[in-house]
Amino acid sequence: MSYSFDVLWLSASPSLKYFDQLLLRNLSKYLNIARWEYRQTKDEASSIDKAVALLYDCVQSCDRPVHLVGHGISGIVGLIFARQYPQQVQSLTLLAVAAQPATTWHTHYYIQRQLLPITREQVLVNTVRSLFGNKHHYSTKKLAIALERDLEESPSVHSLFRLANLPKGDVSVPLMVCGSKTDPVVHPPVLHEWLTWLKPEDKLWECPAGYHFFHHFYPQLVGKQILHFWQLNHPQLLPKIVNS
Image (cartoon, rainbow, N blue to C red):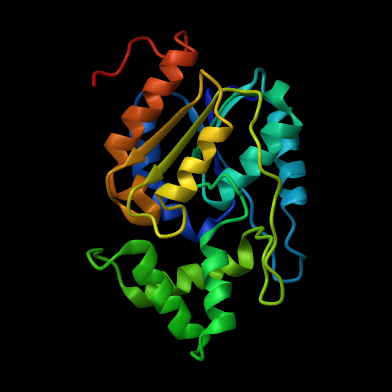
């Protein structure tokens, strides 16, 4: 069976997928978007390679190469996939993904666990405040629970015993990298390391605020930038340019 859609949204952090919904809703006004989800169980070893293999099974069933979009660890899965299977990808859009792809909020969590004499629960609360700031309208406890689940369900390369790195570099397909000026994880100096790898058709864009989940707090602004990127590289994808 083959599937037909324009964009595949990657979700390798199912406990945090709520924060993708507003941007997905915005983009879905213009394009046919499907969502791919990966969730590992507590009995499975954390493996990005397994997630990439399962994504390949999905994408090879499509009737044409697709545009991939992913935030955080989901974007890392997309990045590795695009490097291994560029013929399957029209473009890649990364949200809050560093040039050193292994730099995630998990990195900051495990560093705190190693260095600070505080409980796991307190580290999670500190992480909520760092990732979302002080102006969010959500329960800190619920956000901490969602982050705790993400540590168990997403294919992170890190653990309490070891922090890992992943290969740096570019991809052969058109690439857009989005970040936030207030992201404590992929902060501007870390984000700007991508400039070494960008091709002429690639784009790096920074949201003025929004912390790590800036696409949730500014879905229209982020969506407009992504649509412009797709329009520039694949004008046949959109019937008309979204006005600035």
